[in-house]
Structures are given as C-alpha cells and as structure tokens.
Image 1 (spheres, rainbow, N blue to C red):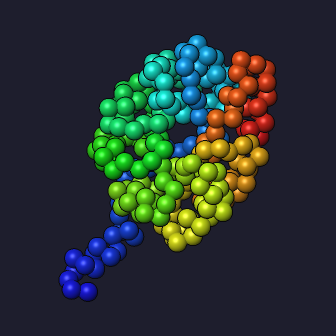
Image 2 (image 1 turned 180 degrees about the horizontal axis):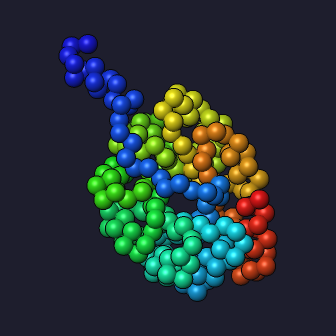
Length: 219
C-alpha cells in the first residue's frame, strides 16, 4: 500500500453506499410485457390484476410503451408498474414521468445508472459477468437483473456469479428464456428475489388460458 487512498480504493466495494434500491416487491414473478397494441396491453394488465399478480414490466421495445404505462397506472392504481428495456436517460425520464415505479435494463450503462441515482429513480441494470456486477455495485446498485439468463448458462452460471459476492448481499432478478418450471428452480436460490418472464403472455388472445397461466405461475 502506498497511501491511504490505495487502501480506500481497495475497500470501496465493501463500503459503497447502496442508493439504487428496489422498492419492496411482494411478488416472485415479474411479467415482462412486450406489447404493440394498447388495448391488448391494457387487457393483459387487467388479467394480471384479476388473477392475483398485479405487477408488470412494460418494455420500451414498442412505440406504445410510454402510453401503456401511463394508462395502466391510471386504470389499475393497485398495480406495481415498471418499465423495461430502458437503454438511455431519455427513456428513463419518460418512464418515470408516465408513472413507472421502477425501471429495468438488459445491460449495464453507467450513464443511466448515475442519472437514475441523481433523480432517485429505482433502476435495475442487467449484468451477466463479474466485471459488470462490480461496476454496478460500485455505483450503488444492490439489485441486479441477470440477463440473458438461460442463454449465458442459466442456474449454474448465476450460482457461480453469486459465489464471490455473496457477502455483499446483492439480489438478482433472472430474466431471459425462463419457463415457469425453471422459475421455481431460480427462486430456490436465496439471492434471487424474483424472476422476470414473458411466458405469461404467450397465449394471447386466449384470455382464459392466459388467466390459467398467471394463476399457475403465481402459485
């Protein structure tokens, strides 16, 4: 050690302030919605509420995302609405202005993380490597999206990623290629807080089957 500064830098991962915390979520499954039609999106949100899973990550993969978030918040105030695929600060601000309670990204973009922290927005960046995890944690993120979960090695990869950082108390939301059966296996890992999945929308417009899938996933 050449200086106190070197010592402090070495310990920074353990001493960093964790400011980008996630609001408490009483749900183990987070439905990921990729919707191109407003009415269909609202019907899906209604179906989620009616079947005991009033939460959704509405992704910015379509032009209607901002409007769908705004309308969902207005029509279903009991619902915990988040924004997904938030890749830049413009969409970050649009999401929260529309009423989103949290935002999620597939990757780690320090510019977006810093903007979220400055505005006190709950933001969950995506990681799949130790380097990304350390950078996100250094910026105050202690709740991370593990993406694309199945494509990068699934449960075995996540457990390996968790191992060196277990003492930091970081929690994860695996997302990407996960089925309802696999979700249960992920949720058995103590560091997994919830699982994101698009399987709940696969039977649209068969709303009876969608409802059955929601109930099955919720239980």
